[in-house]
Length: 350
Image 1 (spheres, rainbow, N blue to C red):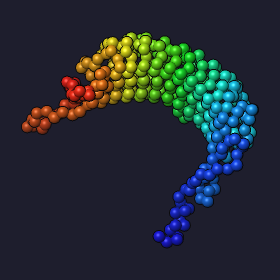
Image 2: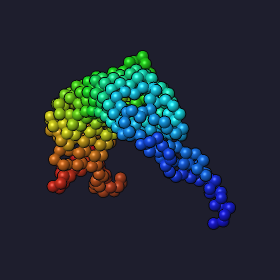
Image 3: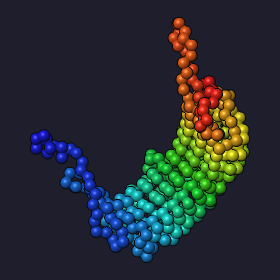
Image 4: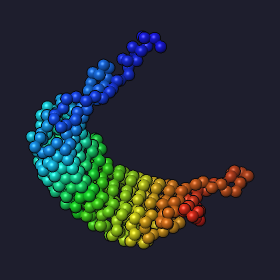
């Protein structure tokens, strides 16, 4: 290859590499360089475990990610996140601290912040407008002590961007939304491991993924998921108190593709009409339950491809060749063929 061709490739192809730079004592700075002749750089700063007395930390001007986890911090305010380098942060990790309070203006100057981790702290309240000035796409508030949540707090700047919110393993017994305020563009919501006794009203939230595992819900009422027409994945697993799912309980979930009802040992029976409107459902998990799968259920599940049942039984959709007809050719029919570790089980003809 001629030297002229190599020269043109260097102009077209981006270059990148990593190196370390001088950093605040006990912190570690890693620099990623991009572009021709390393003309552009971004810095990741790891200040985890340095102790609360050293915060705020001076950071380089091109810092995009800052890790302040495991520092025994008890509160966070705006002054702790102010200074050169902070305004360009894209990711901030405040996990594994002792944070019990966050000021409403704490993150107001972080105009480019996309990922925020506040998990494993002692937060009991999220102030209104706490996140409104940042274009967040990922918020982790898992493993705190939140008692209730108003979803409007996740109505961020730049609502065109979808948001993933993790509220798992808190003490949440109530989820609400103020109707006359902007609708948060939450795409994924994890509420597993909380204290919800009923399915929360999430109408209007453009959810695609919802996890309610491990909450003390005893009954899924009719129309429990109204207004969630874009939901594609729903998990209701490990709910020891769950006894019954009412017919039409999943009404409106016409886009749902995956439904996990596993490990609900007290759920003994499912009326076939429970699956009413689930025309897009492809995967159904019923392992660890007291219920059985019946042929009438298939009437409501035209797109089903896989059903996991009790006793290690897995059913998969296959095409079965039938008799040959002179005019129409060989006939075909769809069969849900089930297998266990002990061999084949009688198939369900769709």
